[in-house]
Image 1 (cartoon, one colour):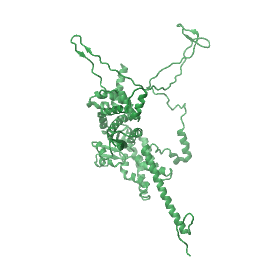
Image 2 (cartoon, rainbow, N blue to C red):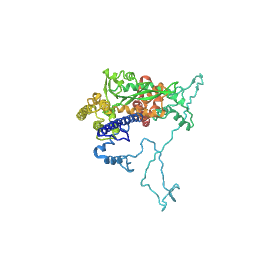
Image 3 (cartoon, rainbow, N blue to C red):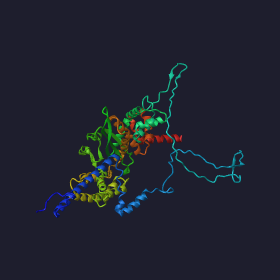
Image 4 (tube, rainbow, N blue to C red):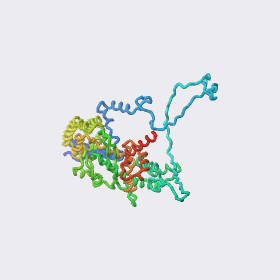
Length: 529
């Protein structure tokens, strides 16, 4: 009787070696498939987390000790980095900001009434009654907070009549940011900055104001935001012209939920940002950020925004930029941060295996970034020379290495996708080596969208497409002020107090760097007088 060949069950062991080998092979295939599924799910989770919370966790420095000296070294360095600095560390400046007002309070010791001066005031030692003399003093400072408060400005315009001819004279009513509006420039600026810089929804602001005894409902605040946005439109347009006058700009976009009127549902709009920032090449030109809202992500929108632009566009791999590059009027510069991202995901999914291909790729990219740190702030010609001498050979080696990997990995694997992302964009990724004006990545634009992501998590959605356009306008002014080290609220207070009466043909005077320079000069003149 021959051996009965049946599919083995948990209770029926294999009958021969061939059967056992087939079972092992089948289970190995199943395990390999399951591992691929797990890796894929890990990558999907990482990408979901990144889309919701950003990329702040993509820090390679934390893993470098594993490469250099093992896990013990990493733990030691991590503890050293996280340990708080000693309270008496002389290298840390703990003085309070000099621009803050000082309220000086002098504390004198108790004195004896045994000895009195000529005015009859006690001035003696408590021990013997002798006169005291000052030999020095100890000064310490304490930071205090004065809560914000409302005030009412009453404008009084007396009517004057001539005693002879009875003609009547009266001063013109002072202009207001919003015609016949209740809100002053300071209050409007505070509402705008609270929402678009501090990410505080209008209904929360309404509750805060109510605690001070001022009832301002959400609809009133929304009306003020709408009218302020319309008032600032010419200034935002001027900011856009300034931004697109640069030889190189950064661009990116992010989704924003927008309420669909009458349906009670939201759709996905897009907020685009175009950033001018040449500080890394030592330029003194003020940086700027110009935002635009669109109801969808069609390529026609950036084509319209950049219709007249001529120069270098540094952006991600979004296909909508394609027609702009094809026109020959705009030069593509790709982003190494985006090229690095799939390698980072693979590195995490491998359990941070330092021998993996992903870890090798990350080390190569880290070497390129190390060169950029050395030349940051240098003129374009120096940056170009350094990149060609130092980064050029590294890029050539990396290209050969990636090309060799193509034939060794599955075409449908995540590893193949990471390799393909870099190789298909290699010319655009390496263009920064031939032009010192170009940055290695598009982080300038990504940083400009972080505030939008935080706001999106707080106020959940925009009320309409018009609300999206208003948000883009305010974001433009707030972010540009921040890029120039200017307090956004102080800037908007100044702008809103002037813009209603400002000549439209001189609108550039109200750009953040111009307006605040005027304000500083005026303050200096007042102090000198």
